[in-house]
Image (cartoon, rainbow, N blue to C red):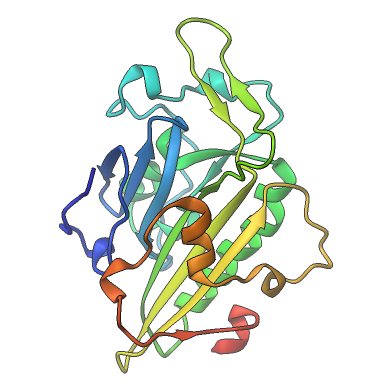
Length: 239
């Protein structure tokens, strides 16, 4: 199902999904097949405020029950409810932060992936957004499945629950619009596993087209034919 470009976040395109969910400060494309988001698209808003992290994880009742994850589906699995749109990226208001805790914004993540390398990349993105040359920072994130590898599942065993496939990896593509109108991009694929601290983030950088080939998504479709500088190296060195 193709969604119309109604929100600021979708200025540079919005991929297809079974159900597109419009939140106050991000847009998400949900997959009924995978019982989790295919992608989540946001404009980073990490300005300092009095907002406190909500931590109110809850089901997203806009999704039909037979495709909808519940808290019980993650319970005692050993996997984190990993944010696609980071809580710390959306702190302009309490409701803005709270919406990042909808389970539609979660995917099963290895704890040491979620709390280490994924968290590091989220932090680098926020620091990038604070650069003097940055006008806006657009981010699209999502799970990746490699169909030449076995897919493991977590979730409820009873009739009322769903099972969730565990992604093999996650992607994040960061598009920056500078104050001069230039566009710069960084894209990453990181395995959903414990990554050694000694491995730098730039070792996970890929071409955006690589993400598209694996995911079957068309990222930043409004930029077809536009010249974009694909950045290399650690994000912090660019600013």
